Amino acid sequence: MSLLRRFLIRPAARVLSIWTGPRMLYGWRNADGSWCPHTRVSSHTCLEGGAGLVLGDHVFVGHFSRLDGSNGLVVEEGVQITSHVCVLSHSSHGAVRVMGRQYVRDPQPAGYVRRATHIGAYSFIGPHSVIAPGARLGRGVVVQAYSFVRGEVPDFAIVGPQAPGRPAEVLGDTREVDGPVLAQRPELQRLYAEWAGHGNLNRALAAASRPPSEAAR
Image (cartoon, rainbow, N blue to C red; front, side, top):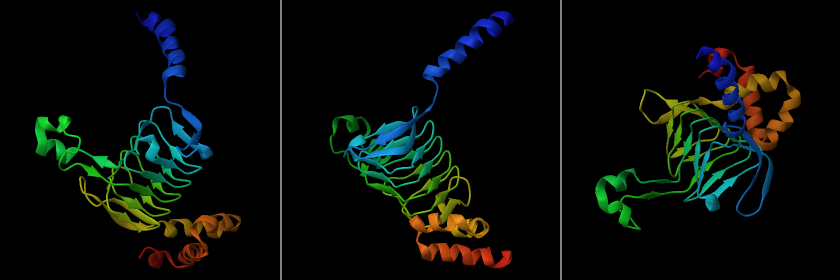
């Protein structure tokens, strides 16, 4: 059996995985016809409500994630969505409880949530995170792994759970992280300013010039 597994089963599984395993697909066309040549979406991501789903260019969507555009979902340029992430624009969890068996027969179930969701440019969504219906994430946001994000998230916020099972809260500012890199690589400053703005570039560079104890405040 060990020889059969080594010389037949394992090679056959490798060949099969080439055709059935997860892989990145390059290029994305939105419902309005706009083409995003640098956007990459996993072959194993679940996409719902394509008519309401808008992806910008240079977006990355990793394996085994779910994007729900049924009530409107905009993912701006440069956003990175890692693996096992759910970005939602509807939720039936309350409707199922209050309506029971009647839920499947009612076109307008009570307690059903429909809210458009928005993720700002060059944000990063860590693995195993959930972005709730109606959430609006600003530009340059970092969502730590295993986060549940709802409501408004300001530009350049670092968000994550303060304790397991709790909704994500603001923990820091991505400009504090970006500043030292931009100071060391001045050729990148123009590219950063193109999407973040010169005011945010200056704030990042100012943070880099402060002593570590002050920059952490």
